[in-house]
Length: 113
Length: 242
Ligand code: HEM
Ligand code: SF4
Ligand code: SF4
Ligand code: FES
Image (tube, rainbow over all chains, first blue to last red; front, side, top):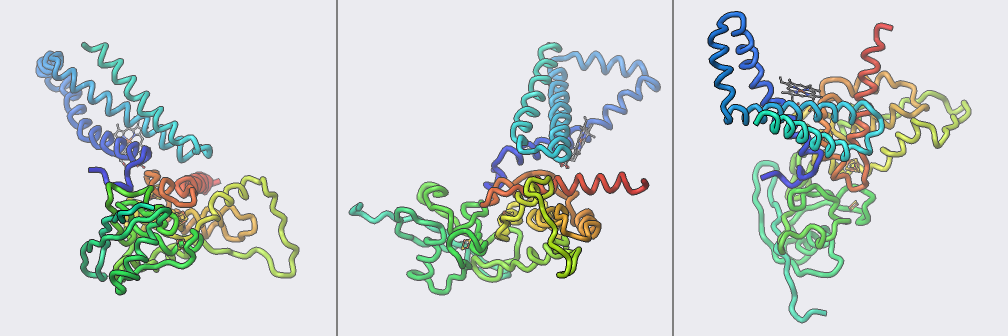
């Protein structure tokens, strides 16, 4: 359960940013490893790429793009909040960041299925 | 008048610096009752040994803050009706500060950090110089206005998870104070302020979670002040060579 003093949109934005940042950090080493297969073992890479065509992997990709979009817009939100001195509109930015992230992820989702 | 007296179930944290637990009390409910009224009623009618702190009862002195149902609040200006969960209340000492006894916390670290953050006036003139004129609409003065209504209640400090995770972090109130000093044209030593707030326990620890600004009873925005210090720190970092 979320502790009572944390139940507000700014904290929600913070925790989304942390979880998505962590998720990306976990994903990136695998990503780089796979890219390296282009040079070292192209056959295995092709085999892997055909595996990525399965719906379940497509769905996982949706998750990844969602993480990146959340983190990207969350990061932009933070930098706007901290570096532009007009931050009364911070809450609107939170909403906007989440909404845009969701929009992009959904568009990606619709394209892959 | 209702014929049957309604009660509130109040669970109050009792203990010393080392251990403690919640104790339950039944307190008669009234119209326009504050959390401080409830705590005082317990102390006056049920257990005279209950320790708590207050002074002004009108939201000016900043001494009565406690955790109420998990949220830091000024108890003298918090109406029971606004925060009651079912018919239950849970009252505890402020988070992030050591407990002295029951609901009383030791606020020394909170105040010491104001000094560590250089939330002090560094005079630029003697009494023989004419008083500096401050244009009320000037940018610096507007920033200061947003920060000086702080009553030192430590609610923001109790709400801040960064304080919880890093005991050296100066915290929202001290940093906000430093931001007002930094913006004061009458202050002669802004570099000292900047050094104090950009060090290890300084403004760069803040993750802009905003719990300080959400819970400040005076609607101040320490998160915003800290963002100002971050900008000032960044600007001075990039200007260092030039
Ligand atoms: C797409 C562009 C990106 C932007 C604009 C961005 C922006 C930011 C910002 C501003 C923070 C500071 C948050 C804070 O103070 O709490 C942050 C934290 C973080 N980022 Fe990113 N980031 C980006 C990409 C990434 C990537 C690709 C990764 C994965 C390796 C990543 C992992 C993290 C982690 C683990 C944190 C710490 C989370 C935290 O402090 O709460 N970021 N990011
Ligand atoms: S900034 Fe607000 S919450 Fe923090 S000490 Fe001052 S009045 Fe209290
Ligand atoms: S915005 Fe910064 S100072 Fe305020 S509660 Fe969050 S981490 Fe603490
Ligand atoms: S008793 Fe002074 S602020 Fe509550």
